[in-house]
Length: 435
Image 1 (cartoon, one colour):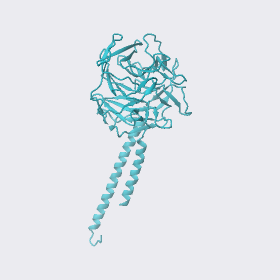
Image 2 (tube, helix red, strand yellow; image 1 turned 180 degrees about the horizontal axis):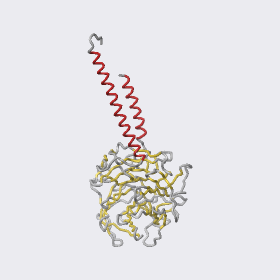
Image 3 (cartoon, one colour; image 1 turned 90 degrees about the vertical axis):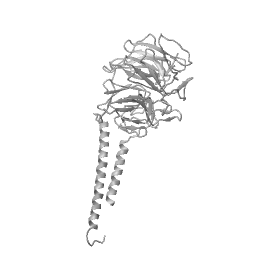
Image 4 (cartoon, one colour; image 1 turned 180 degrees about the vertical axis):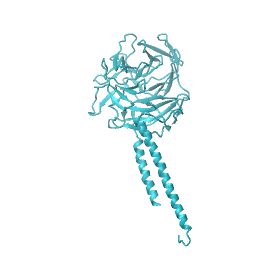
C-alpha cells in the first residue's frame, strides 16, 4: 500500500502548489479604483499596506458563487498597471471594451518617481494592453480626488478636484471633458451659477443626462480652510445644456428648513462626509456608504451617521432615506473604499476600517432589493461561465484541469486499492496457502 499513498501525497502537494499560484492574495489598499467589465470586478491601483509600490492588476470572477470569507482573486499581471496611482478615477467606455484611468498621484514604473507626463491611460480589455491616447486639443490638468462619469454620447465629465503636484496645492471648480470617440480633452467655458471648488465628492449620471454630485470637501475662498459639503446641498450638472444648478434638501426632523432656487427635497438627516462611495440603481436611487469627517483644516477620524443612506432621484424633489435594515450585519465604518453595482448587489471592496485604523481586507455585499447585507454571493441563473478574456479563461481552464486531475488521481488510487484487495482475496482462497 506504500505506492498509492506516496502517489497521492505527490499529487496533493502538486495541487497545493498550483492552488497557491491561482489563489492570489492581493495587498490591502484604499483610495483605489474598481470597474466591472464582462462580469469581472477589476481592481486598479490604490495606496497599499506594503512598503513597495504595487503595479498589479487583478480581478474577482463574478460568474462564480462565493462568500466574503473565501474570495478567489485572480492576478492578471504582476506589473499590469502602467503607473502606480491612487486618488484617481476610472471610467468604462460605452461598449464595455475600454477602461479609462485618469489623474491621481502617479508613480513611474521604472524610475519610481512622480511622473505626470501622461495623465490619461486606456486599457483594452480584449488584448489586455495599456495605451496613452493623446488628446487632439487642450491640456489635461493634473488632478486628484476626482470622479468621472460618461454620458450616452461617450463623453467623460470630470468636475473640480485637487492638484497637489505643486508646492501650494489648489482645489478647483472647473468642468473638464474627454471625448472618447475623438480623444479630445476640453475645459468647458461656464460662467453662470458655478459651484464652489470641490473634491472627493461622488458623481452619478442619471438617464436624463444630469450628473448628481454629493458631498466631499469645498473651499469658500483661497485663504479659507476646506469644509465639508452639507448633504442638503446637491450639485446638478446638465450635460445637454452645460449648466449648473443646485438642489437644497429640507430635512423632516428638527433641522432648519431653507428654500433654494425653488427646488426642495425632504428626508432624513445625513452627516456630511468625504472618502465615501455611491452607486446608482436602475430604479433611480443613489446609495451612499461610509466616509469620514473633516474639521478645521484636518482629517477627523470619526465615523459618519448613517453609514448607508439612499437618495431617491425619481421625484422632482430628491429625498434622503435610511433603509431600516442597513445597520444589520453592516461592515465596520470604512472610508477610501469603492462600490460597484452588479445586478442586485452593491459590492464594496477594500478601504480602511475607521475603528482600528486598519486596511480592510474583506469584500462586502449589500442586496439592494432586500436592503440587507449578505455574506454570500450567487451569480444570476442566466449567466454562463464562458468568456473571451484570456486571463479569465486561463484561470477557469486551470481550475477545471485541477479538478479533472484530482478526479483522475482519486479514481486511479481507488482502482489500485480495489485490485490489491481482490488479489489478496484470491491468494486467501488458494488451497495450502500459509497466508
